[in-house]
Amino acid sequence: MNKSFSKNVLTLMTGTGIAQAIPIAIIPILTRMFSPEDFGLLALYAACVSILGVVATGRYEIAIMLPKDDEDARLLLQLSMLVALFFSLLISIPISIWNAQIAHFLGNEDIAVWLYLVPVSVLFTGIYQALTYWNNRQKKFINTAVSRVNQSLFQGFAQTSLGFLQVSGGLICGQFVGIVSGSIYLLKKDRNYKSLIRKSKINSIQKQGIKYHKFPTYGVLGALCDAGAVQMPVILLTKFYSNSVTGMFSLTFRVLNMPTSIISSAIAQVLFQKVVEISQTEPEKLNLYIIKMFLLLFIIYLPAVPVLFIWGESLFSIVFGNEWSQAGVYAGYLVIAVAVRFAVSPLSAVLGLEQNIKMGVLWQVLYLCTISVTLYFSSSLSIEEFLIAFVVHEVVLYLIYLFLILKGTKEIAKC
Image (cartoon, rainbow, N blue to C red; front, side):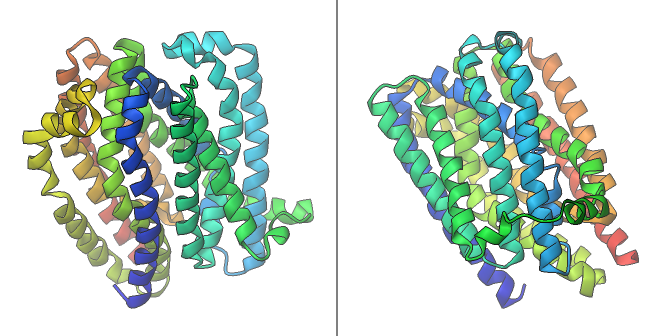
């Protein structure tokens, strides 16, 4: 790893670290203000936004990194925002017409009123994703880092304030405030932000859309499968168990992923730029580079597994309150799945390149099918058995993912 890569990772890690430290610090406060049922409602809402948000831009935001000319990249940024706007307007139609039916299908009637907020949240999620890739292209990693801190500050302040005032849905409102503030910050921070949204000839934008058509053609399905698979446990837990169980599961998974995100998400974003660079200059070295990164990430997380497996229940009870002791039991199982994801997920940048998009989609479809079948047939079991089935599935599928990533590096070397 060269100095530039290390510096960029450190910048994003610092920003992500501070951004993650804020919610980590306030979670023990929020768990005493809101019930597991409230966290279950937030989890379901966040699942809806996450699934729809990843495809809001048509995946054109990823293509922003690729053009040699900044003007072409700016056109892709504009295209991403326009697609996000159109998509948000499109999904608002069924939500407005079949609001109650959708809430009933999801298994939580309380989500009905909050579904109206989903299209706006999806719009700002798409804008934030596009602006993040734009800043990464410009190597303005400090902007991305500060935007995350800004987002966490606004979200944390809103959630604790609304919790103190005992406002129903305070967790959801706070999350919405966070994503809006992050998007506005990135938009205004760029000195040329007005040029990002200035009028461009529609045929110029259309030309870029056609040139990078593989991203919506293959990337949307893959991203939808990926997000759907990630959120599948929350959706099925809400459907077949209780809101309380969903809340405990979501909080546990969130807490376990927070520390890892400080390193994992920072490396993933900088790694994408690094993978593009190596694939264009020294593609034969990419395979060894990915193996080293996998081993490094695996070693970093390994010590957490026995600690949480043995003392998880006690730790959660002390930190979050006695009402959340069962979540500590969940943590003992889920930490294994998180460890595997942590070591493999950041490396998926290899499958984000044009040569390997189909391979990435193949795994995502496989993952969605297997996680859906596994968890659906496990839904009649006890929650502990459900979690064991989930963990076994994660280990097997992410090892397959690693194999495909390494195969992808060889495909790049052939080009």
